[in-house]
Amino acid sequence: MDVHELKISCQKCRLSELCLPYGLESEELDRLEHIVQRPAPLRRGEVLYRAGGSFHAIYAVRSGALKIFSGSEDGHEQILGFYLPGELLGLDGMDKDLHKCTAVALETSSVCTLPFNQLSVLCEKIPGLQKRLFRLIGREIGVEHELLLMMGQKDAEERLAIFLVTLAARFKRRGYSQSEFRLPMSRHDLANYLGLTPETVSRLFGRFRKNGLIETNRSLVKLLDMSRLVTLCAGPEDAGRLAAVMN
Amino acid sequence: MDVHELKISCQKCRLSELCLPYGLESEELDRLEHIVQRPAPLRRGEVLYRAGGSFHAIYAVRSGALKIFSGSEDGHEQILGFYLPGELLGLDGMDKDLHKCTAVALETSSVCTLPFNQLSVLCEKIPGLQKRLFRLIGREIGVEHELLLMMGQKDAEERLAIFLVTLAARFKRRGYSQSEFRLPMSRHDLANYLGLTPETVSRLFGRFRKNGLIETNRSLVKLLDMSRLVTLCAGPEDAGRLAAVMN
DNA sequence: CGCGTCGTTGAAGCCGCTCAATAGATGTGG
DNA sequence: CCACATCTATTGAGCGGCTTCAACGACGCG
Image (tube, rainbow over all chains, first blue to last red):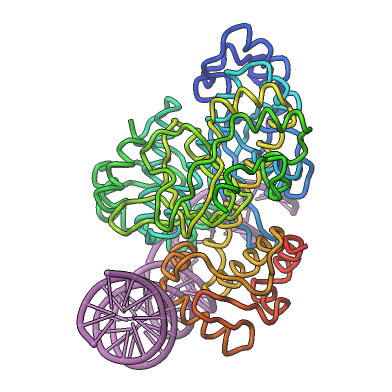
C-alpha cells in the first residue's frame, strides 16, 4: 500500500481539486509533478519541520493529520492549526527563510514536499499555478482571521461548537462523513488550540453530550444535531457565515 | 503637500525598503511604478475596502494608519490588525476574490493601490518581485501567529506590554521615536484588538503609569523603561524573541 | 455653552482556570 | 495473560482575573 501511495501522482490524486493542482492543465500538472517529492510517511509525533529550522519547502498533506505550534518548548506552546489532507502548510517560513513554528504529525501521515525555489520558478512559468498558490495563501490567512475572531469574541462553548462544525465541513469536503469522525488530536491539543484548558473542553463535551448534541467515545465524535450546533456557534450572523462553510 | 505626495514614486519613497520594492532594480521599479495607483488620501473613518466587496488590489500604506476587522456589523467586530506606513494589506481577499474583512483609516492616510491582476503578471516577469511578495506574505502570516499566541497564552498585562513593545519596534523601523509616540487607535479599538475590554486596558495603562513604566497623555505614550516592559511581556524565552524584534 | 463621545475609575459577579482525585486506556515486561 | 506503570480523560471544589454595569470627568465639536 505504501509503495502504491508513493507512486501516486498529482494527476490521479483525488485531493487535487482541494490542493495546488486544481485548475491546471495536464501538461502543467506534469511539470508540477516533477518537483514534488514524496518522502516516507511520518509516524505519530514525528516532526515535519521545526521552529528555527531553515525553510526550503511547503508541504501538502496527502493523508493523516498534522498540527503546527509556536512558542517555547516549556509547554507554553500555542497550537496554531491542524492540517488535513489537501491542505498546505509551511507558509510561515517564507518571511525569513526560517520556520517560526513546528509541524508534527498527529497520526501516521504522508505529505508531498514542494521545494519552494522550484515552486517559485514554476509559478513564473505557469500563471495558473501562481494564481492557485495565491488563493490557497489567501485561504490560510482567512482561516487565521476566523481563528482570531474566535479567540477574541467567543466563549468556551461557542469555540467548541465552531470547531466541531468547521471540522465536520472539512471532513465532508474530503469525502468523509460530516456527522461522525475521529478527532486526530488529543484533548490537550484541542484545548490549547481553542485557548482553553483540557478540563474545560472535557466539561463542554459532557454538556454537549447531556444536551443530545453529540455522542463521544474516546476520540470518536458523532454530531447528532448539526443545526442546533450551528446555532450554538453564535448569533444569527455567524450562523449564516458558518452555513456557507458547510455546503 | 498632497500634490507633492501624489507625485512620489517608489524610486524615491523612503519606505521602499520596508515595502514591496525592496531589492528591485531600477528598471524593475519602473515597471512596478506603472501599475501603482495613488488615490486621494482617506480621512479618519473612511473605508478602503469592505467585507464582501470584490477584491481587485492589495494596498501599501504610505502614510497614516489603518485597521482591519472582521465579524458582524452589530458591534461584535474583531480587529485583526493595525497597519503602518510600508505595510501591505488586503491579502485576505486572494482566496475568493472577495474581501472577508473591512479596512478603515484611523487617521488621514495615503495608500498605494496595487491592482492584483497586474501585480500577478508582473510577478511572473520579475522574480525578485514575486520573491519579495512571498516574503511579505510570510511576514503577515507570522504576525498573525504571534497574535494567536498572545490571545491563547497571555494575560491582559502581558498583552498590553507586548503590544507596546512591538509597536515601538515598528515605529523605530520607520524612523520615528521608539520611546515616544502617538497611538493612532482608540482605547476601544486597542482593547478589541487585544481581546480585552476598554476598561481593562485603561486600568492597565494606569498600573503601568503607577509603576513608572510609561507616561500617557491622551493618545500620546512615552515608554520610560523598555527593559522592564520587555520583561513584562512574559517568561525568559519571549524576552529573547522580542529583543530580536527590537533591533 | 450644551451635547456626545471617549477615557477613567469603582463595585460586584461570573466564566474559565487551578488544584486535586479518580477512572479509563495504553503499553510493557515478567 | 496479567500486573504494573504511565498517560489521558473526566469530574469536582474553590479561586481569581477579567467582564459587566454604572457613574463620573475630560475633551472636542456643533
